[in-house]
Image (tube, rainbow, N blue to C red):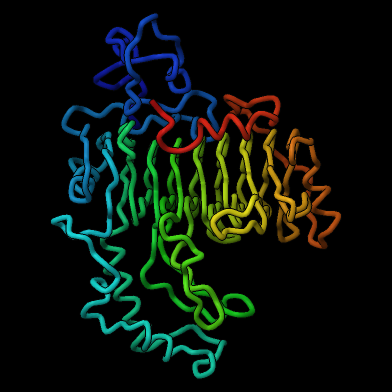
Length: 445
């Protein structure tokens, strides 16, 4: 089905002006100024502005802007959200307004579900699992297999059926302002879909009840979990804007340790993989999380043209982002590495597998225990072309700082030049103050 044009909505932009639904606060999504005395902004019909990052390329991104009345719905529980995502033809433009917090760990009647509920009738027991795959007995050279691993996978599949929801093409999912809108314990999956907008939502504690033990992951093994708060897989033209991503209230500091490793129940916050392309991530707040954003699922991934601008990272351990293969533009983001709620910074940006990153006018607030040489990371093949980036208020050459203390060098030049740079601020100096006010869910009005 052809992409609905920005002008095909049942409520055109001139009509919005005439009805007083546009104000100056909407100028980031509409190309003209409203008349004096305009009323409240209709955020749900907002579209990505021209030149606003990679998602503005080509046909642009307007999500469900053209939705008709039956496909413009307000939801406040899991059942309503599931119905709205699946209503009508799969390509039909739709707007889904999320009112308040929706817990995805619930049954069809809204009754809360626990990890024990998912494990019921599968034969899974954490005690039995730990006994079966203790490295002292199982060893460290092969992945778990057998009865308890099969039971763990069955229990995980039961949880996945409740907490992972597909977002179809031509969809806007947006939080209703003033309602603390968001999704608890769940994952929105944009899989091989095009033209999707996700805005003004808090994604909290997307937690896997059944992490898998992998003794071959690193030198000591690791526990790996399954769900990201938002996952893009083979998705195109996606705009994620003014959202908050957090592990709260279940912070990693409360996780136990088994086999000497943290029992990690959280995976990514926003992962962009499997040849996803033309993505803009703007004005989001990423807080209290470990593996935050993966761009590229493997060294053989493709496409992956992504823009990150005006995002705030606080209490982030790593992957802000980890980038493979693609052309990624970072501008006007603030990275605060101060230890927070038990989360301690390892690095911010990883450029590997020939990734081509351009970073302009970002700001790092480093705590006293961190150095500029610890901001970047890489495998020796990635590139990072930086300009105007500040560390504690001073313009700093991040690649030079990294390369001085590391054997696997990062290349300081790339083979492409960003042109989709709407809102690029010429200095990073004011970002800590401004993004504290404007980034994250609940700041849109």
